[in-house]
Image 1 (cartoon, helix red, strand yellow):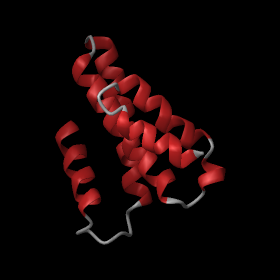
Image 2 (image 1 turned 60 degrees about the horizontal axis):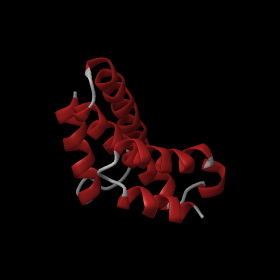
Image 3 (image 1 turned 135 degrees about the horizontal axis):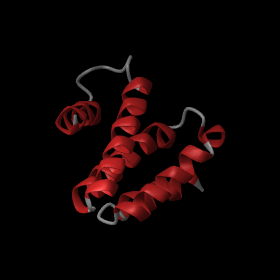
Image 4 (image 1 turned 90 degrees about the vertical axis):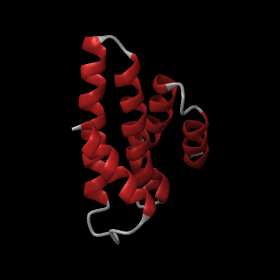
Length: 101
């Protein structure tokens, strides 16, 4: 079920609100996915969706989306703090996070 939410979130990547909601479903039920890849990558999905929303929304909504994106990136990077630094998705996430700050 949560793999489906992850895949749906990926497909909705250009619809930031819908995407964020799909990834949030995974995070809201983290006990089910526990240490599965979908749980960790859901944080990155939420971060990317909120980053997109921060670029396409009005000022107040954009600021709130940016704060949510930063928090989600921090969560993802905390989960992956011991990962090999050359993993492509980790390198991408670090670059995206740095650009957003």
